[in-house]
Length: 169
Image (cartoon, rainbow, N blue to C red; front, side, top):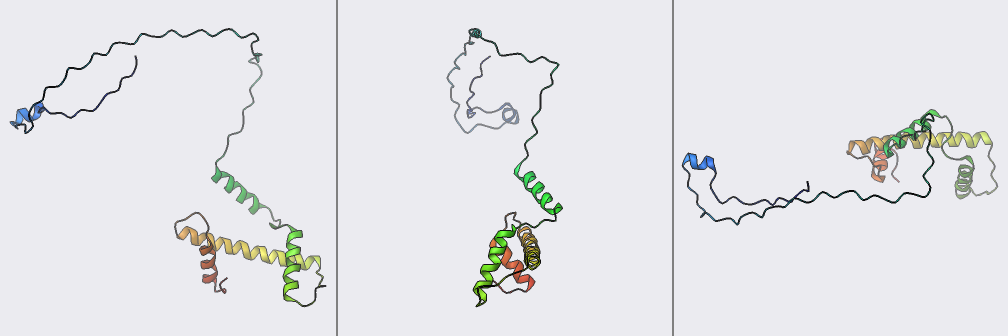
């Protein structure tokens, strides 16, 4: 049966409870127009579609279907990425760009432009830099959580550095 729209109407007549209690209606009683009768809708027969010229090939039931793996949300992907990086002991910053950065900084600070570094020295600098940055990000994340936020802002990093007693940026 087809659904019909029902319109809400204000009741102008007193209810049975108020009549029993002896309450009088303050509104004059209005005559309502008679309802329109709803005629039943004829049931439509389904239209038959034309047969296809070539039917799709049927897969025998003995062959099991391959299920696709369930998709994960953004939070699950972030958590798995964090776990992956925590398990590995590898460096997070690529070695070649970090080496270029170290050379650029030392050229700006030192007068001589022909400085060379041993590979172990650059690795030690990179280890120390990454350790410092991960610790700073952890502290800044705690500041963001304290502020009841998930997103890490610049002010969180500044607050973490201020709490640590480092000079501001």
